[in-house]
Every structure is written in C-alpha cells, then in structure tokens.
Image 1 (cartoon, rainbow, N blue to C red):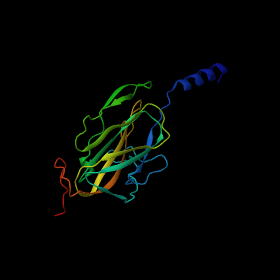
Image 2: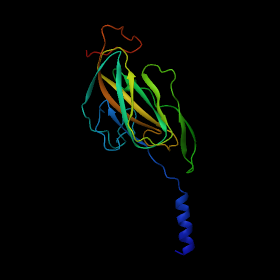
Image 3: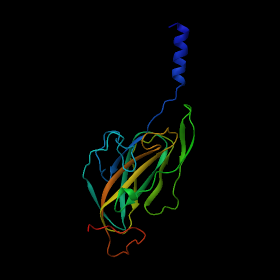
Image 4: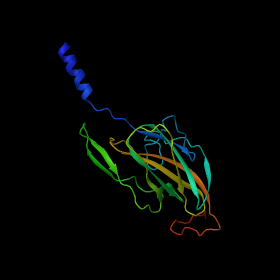
Length: 205
C-alpha cells in the first residue's frame, strides 16, 4: 500500500459515523431481570432482553400503595439524547403500549436515524408519565422522580420504563427504544376511590 493510499484509507475511516448506543439501568424499583453494568439486556420490547438473551429473572417484587407515588430512579450508562416514559400493565406485559412512534431522517450511512419520538400529552392509561428527563447533553447523576400510581390492587403489575433515543440508528430488536420492567405489588388505599379506568386484576379460575 502506497503512502497516498494509506492516507486516503485513513480519511475514509474518519468519515464513517460513529454510532453510540445509549443504555440505562433501572435502579428503583428493582428490575425484574439481572442487569449488567450497562443495564443490558434491554433492547427487546416490552421489557428488555435481546434476540439471544431473554434475561435472568431477579424475582424482585416491589411493594407499593395505590393512589400514592412510586419513586423512580434510572442511571444512564451510555449517553444519547432522548426522553423516558413510564407505563403500567395490570395483568400482562401484553397490555403495555407500543414504543413511541419515531420521526426519522436518512443518516450519514443511508439508513434511518431517529429525530424525535411521540410524547403522550396528556397521558392516558396505561401510561403513567411521558416526556420525562428530556436532555441533549450527557448526564452523570441518576435521574429521579416520583410517579403517581392508580388506586388499584394487583399482585404482579408490570411497571415499564423505556428510553427513546434521538439521533440514533435502528437496533434489532427495539429500533429506537430501550426497555426495562419491574414487578410491582400494589395495594389499593381503602380511603380512596378505585380508579375505574384501569382493568381489574384477573383471578385464577
């Protein structure tokens, strides 16, 4: 290889865009699968895992009071701009909403790249909060907030926390979204009315 060829090859490598895949850990409530230092596996809808690793269950169950707030804490381990959404399924993860609809553009590599994701405003069941922690810069500190739970009872509700990626190429699976879930046991507050908009917990026949 001549010197001129080496220089041209180096320039071409420098021009290739570097895709940074964002990751996050669900710190509170406790995740339903074991997460590594980056929070993996987390690409698969609706609750993490991947095409080859469904995740090892932790069997963690968080106790919560209906009609009260639940503390949420996540840690971004690899930065990418975007926002978070929280949803709740009473009987099955199948009740969780689809990932946010993405607006995309053609990226430098000719493949789709996300510009933004839909934010539900106002939120409706089963979404508890949306557009959380919007950011365009790296965040080192954990992201924390309190999310209001409906006043219902369920032994094994599924709380889903997702992160929508902006300026991000499509993953397989998950496209532009990362996913974590937690198992929540909610006990309704008898002093408050039951939130009728939410489905009733199915009982075993």
